[in-house]
Image (cartoon, rainbow, N blue to C red; front, side, top):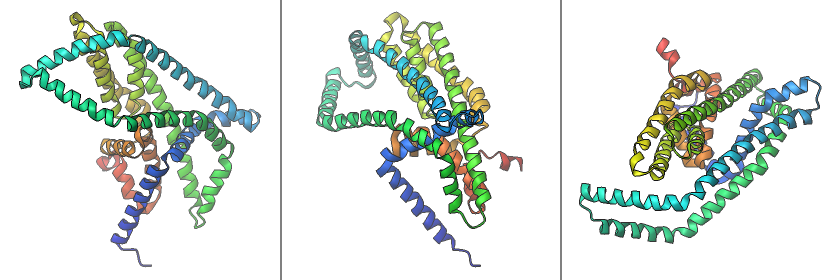
Length: 354
């Protein structure tokens, strides 16, 4: 049997990738809630199966873990909103402090670059004018973000319940598509993908709690304001690989700079040290022990995947990048024609051992 030439295979691969990217861009409002629901459903599946084995009805077996998950998620959002409310209550005071800090930065910048404060203010005024022109577009993005959040709140539990309720039907459909003797291989891929997704999400939740606790202890010891708020913010941003912790460092250090007085500016450095130490602990203990063993994706592919996910679907795409890459690796490793792609995604341990 003649094999297809290489240029034909690569053309089909590129065309498939292009169609998938186009679908994500055009229909992300529809696709992303479903992907998050699949992820949540895989996390709740063991609890659902356990209750079913205890002779509870299918509906009750799904609703009980789902309601518990909603309560936990709502509690996290409530705590975060309370911390944000406390932070916003001090905005007038922080605004005055921010003006002082900004004035100091302008004079420092003048000393370093010899660009006068007046010239800097002209540049700032021009930037503000440009932002005013783009205000309608920014407002529409804000309204769109609020709409997206409401969509997730409403649709995510519904999708999750229906995916768990009809999981046997969905699995039968996927297996039934392949009638060429690969049904067993498909079942193995589904089982392994489900297992990896469960372990990854559960491990990520444990890691987030650990990072939050360590950040809280560090911030409380050095006595910074909004310690719990910044600890929770940094832990949540840490869910986004690589990019999230860098963003958390910048935001937390800026908040500390604005909040501290002139005699306590050293707290800014201490906040950076705390986050750096926690990151070292997380990278060398948390990630390898809790998450890293579940998802063996190399760092280069991880960074590229996170950036591509962010470009296509924003922050939700950055979060979903790793579990999607992990599932793709399972598929690639099981399909002989795609094994080179699986090796590309892997961490190289097998190659190194050889």
